[in-house]
Image 1 (tube, chains in turn orange, cyan):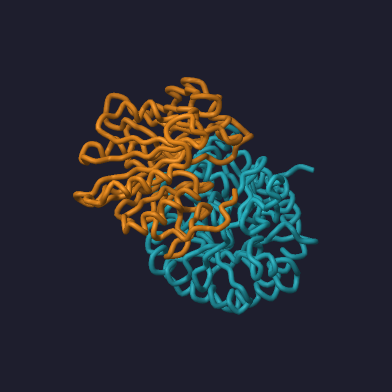
Image 2: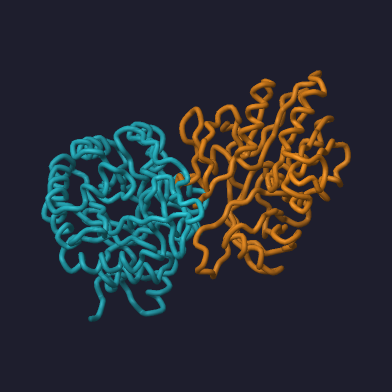
Length: 275
Length: 303
């Protein structure tokens, strides 16, 4: 896994370039950077913090959703849902406000083996790190299928961006049936399987832990390589505090350094997926 | 140019700022953000005889002004530390203070002996105060007798300076610090994270995997300051003050109540450059206030 270990993260002051609400609880935050960072690999994340607040102590980790790191401007995009004090604070930031960024952190998604097709499975906000993966794989892969599920239509925050990408297969589920097929995104996997297996598949998945677990089980049955993006609470983001560990077949691993992308086969899933 | 250097026992530090054990990994994690040679010292993650896996996740919870952790002294163990972590730290001129712990008194001594045989270790900091493991840690740091016994054995067994890291959560911190001093400790570190708890009312579950944890961050600064002040009035050996230090003014407060040097913990997570900014802040403060030597501030509290 270490061949995708992080390069050289930097700690920088950026500025809010755009902070748009999408529906009632979702936001797209775009941050302009004073310099190029990276290279950035889809699946990597950043720690964001705001100075001058005594309410929030620790930075918060967010997947890098989109980026321009070698064009005319340097910027990173994040998609997030307001779930607590930290995300509520970020949601209030106005354009031009300063923000501290530690990035790029963690490893990224590896490419599939030569000749494989990619099936990308996103549950809710799990689309955030998978969207830049779609953009990257599209350059070299002829077959990319995106299975995108959420609770309801308004939770499909990345749908307009995905619809803009030509040449991918996009299948949608919502739990309430307001868009696409009604049910869980994992049921689409079964249909993928029924399409026949002339081409080997690599799976990429991010979303709630029960979903990751279900996809891992499916991948095992198919003997398909499967890469999962794991989410954990973090303090440092650089491997020092050992807060963000996940149990693997090789013992506890740091999600911020050995992850957040793991070979699904190595994860020892918890029965209790508590807070 | 103002003088920032201080002496902690036999150690001469170019400035009084160093990380708190467990918040700075093995140093390498922060080497791309700061020049480790700018620090007064480097303090490692707590090392045990054999690797320790630590507590089940979730391991942290942020709360008002602080962070509750239940890491459980997860570390690579002595052998991997010696082979894979220490060689990197030897590249720096900043003295390396290795924090360590054992599950029994004999184990404390064994770890100390083995660490002291390694090249590039300047001092040992014995953790007698971790709130997150059942045996060892805080259990050994809570009575006069056990602190005296363990300090005595460590001093007899190794030649390196021994620093004893204590908890504030004891009946009489002065008495316990006197025990460490009496048996030859070269310095005392005060305080460790404060035993604490957080629960989720809706699920009625604890918010960290270890059920209880240790509170760190600005919330514990007043507790730490009081512990340092009390102990400074009772012992003559240097005190390393730690607890919620976020900026140079916090650091100066600890020096004012009697600390000789300070350790920075949780604030490293917020801003990996915190310690370097504190050192710069101290220089500017001394210059602006016409103070030539930082040592003039140590123990200068007016009552």
